[in-house]
Image (cartoon, rainbow, N blue to C red):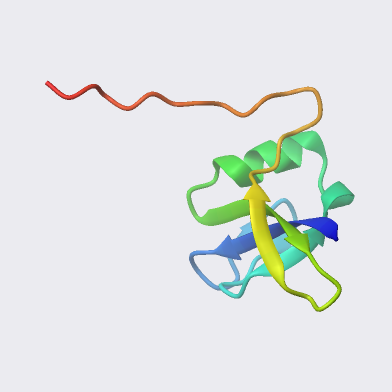
Length: 82
């Protein structure tokens, strides 16, 4: 199984990092974007970005969100209930 970056745009043709993204899930090689581009993609609210494992039949299963080399995922804390 190969890991790929899957990107889904919330609006057809939305552009980020020199690519027009689709509302249809699109798979990209893990090395297709630089670390800075990957951070921009992950941080953009118009895109859904995650890492998937793709089997020989083309079936994809989410395994996580991409992490730029040398950096960890940012974690956010929800406001505690009052």
